[in-house]
Image: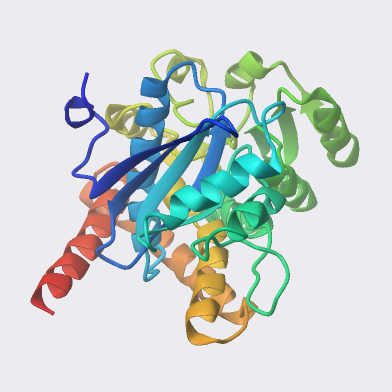
Length: 359
């Protein structure tokens, strides 16, 4: 299979492979769209089974970033990068400096930030070699770890869904199955617990899992058992595609609201959820808080200003209004929520592309 034959290729503007023998760097950067501005998206380090698997992931994720940034009404395009390797054993400062040099070769078409397997400290190493990195700590424009803002957006989305389905303003009496309690999932679990939810949690990191359960009173289950949990809401906060033909019939929830990217294995899964009466908050709408936080840093850098939490709050509130619109239109048009969200994103990207051509 070639790049252009891939089912995940979506007229990407550029797909770039980088390697560095000395540090062992093997990375792919995918720029999906720059219609709304420079492509911005996180860097994922994962022990992919093959380069083909890494390519599929970065193609899907970069398109998702175009949609996420458009729905959040940010002046940024969509891109993503993946580094092939085990983040637990193969990380070195030299590797991330090599990655920074690779990103620099793109001349600002793509800005990298942290994602699964990559920390703020890792990105700071890349920043020593290129200006095209965001999500940093320190300095007047530094936005730091975006995870708390991502979690806040998912939390607000969960409250919004609870009002719709159960006509309540908190989560008292509801059970939420949280899959993955890393950076975002851990923050989210604390917020859900404080709002009155009963939690069922799972993760491959057992010590971290026990720590979160101790402070939230959560029930711990094995990773595969999370799909069978008797819960009201499923919150996928790990890797994507957990809503698939193998898991769908095991879920008994009334809603899906989580932080993971690309939660639907295929678009058809979204239609099945809709037909079954399961309310799905489109992932790139619910989890858009983190990229909004990063956008504030980029905006401050470009204008010579400072990181502005009030600007972030305004964008996050507007994003929740967009989620309301998605849910309203889904009900009135009798269409799955992911189709409505895609239509909004595509219209915004298309409009920006037309203005760019006309300029």
